[in-house]
Amino acid sequence: MTTEWIEASARHGVRKPFRPDSSLRFGLFWPYSRTPIPSALVAQRNPDVMDLGNHVRLAREVEKAGLDFVLLPDGYASGSDDASDIGFQDPSTHGVLWALPLILATERLGVLSTIHTTFVHPVQIARFGGHLDQLSGGRWGWNVVAGNRPVEARLFGFDDVPDHDVRYDMADEVVRVVDQLWANPRAIDHDGMHFHVHGRMRGPRPMARPLLVSAASSARGRSFAAAYCEYLFASITKPADLVEIRADLASKSASIGKTPPPVLLFATVHVREEPGVAVREWEEIEQSLHPSAQKAWAAQLSKATHGGKLNRDYPVMLGTPKEVADQIIDLQRQTGLSGFVLRMPFWAPHEAQLLGLVLAELGRAGHWSPPSTRDWSW
Image (cartoon, rainbow, N blue to C red; front, top):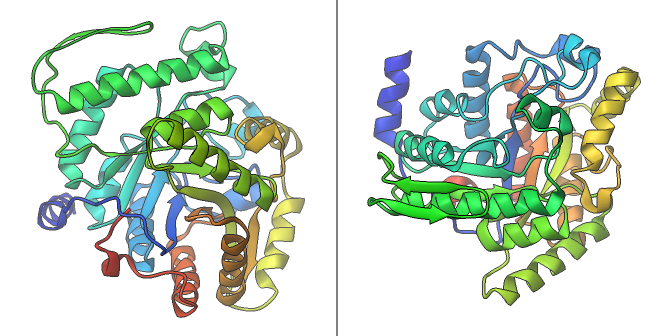
């Protein structure tokens, strides 16, 4: 099977261009642990997260369904014994290492790795990116995360995470260093506030700058996204939040002479072909949430949501493929968003097939076109 993957990668590896247009873009928030929410019920029904075959099968179905990319989340510390006991966030896949088999198992699917700038040195990030770009033929990208969890800071030897703006100052500097290392085959000399990098990094280097994305929610974070990223991924509590975010991005981008990055919305989706089934199953999931693990999850989510507010139920899109497609169209009309990063509570391969039915409905309504018709662009 390994030889099959390598041959497929060499045969089909073609750079994935960034060409946003009127067609909605869709990514999958990758299942990094047995359950994406603190529920033992969901964990019991999902595949083994440490079985690579499960991920390969899902990636191939996601690509067949017509999604544009997958986003591999990552974290380093487990903050709750209760969460670990039910398979929530621990054990989990690695955002860099697990990108490789997904790349080799697919042909055109984009793969985004989450890497934290507060905890990973820019030379390491540049090396990861150079190799993954080479092995994917230009289908790899970086989800830039500044990091905000004290439990992870302590794991790396910090008393606490640096102040919010300091974290983004570090992220600014990390991206500048990585860009230099990617673009320059000669030695670089960088003496900054947080990093000192002198010398020539070994290749390979990316053929072109990989796609950078961010899920920053603060005003400072959006300034970072406007300066460096091709997409902003947003968590919101109501449609008006997204309108405000897009206006703020437009203002910040204009001030530095750039085009604002399109906004993709994080959303939970649960699809069933029979009417009423998705809603009934979601109600069962909500009743199964583990109290203490849920509390830790809520605190984590509130830091990543627009305005620091928490509404973990928005947006949750439930129903048949037609019903979910209608909900997507309604949100697009209200907010002008450019697409979605979808979270699925259950992640067996047939769940991706159901997403494909949603995309087909969107295509019939004129809101989506298959990646093959738009040069497989991000």
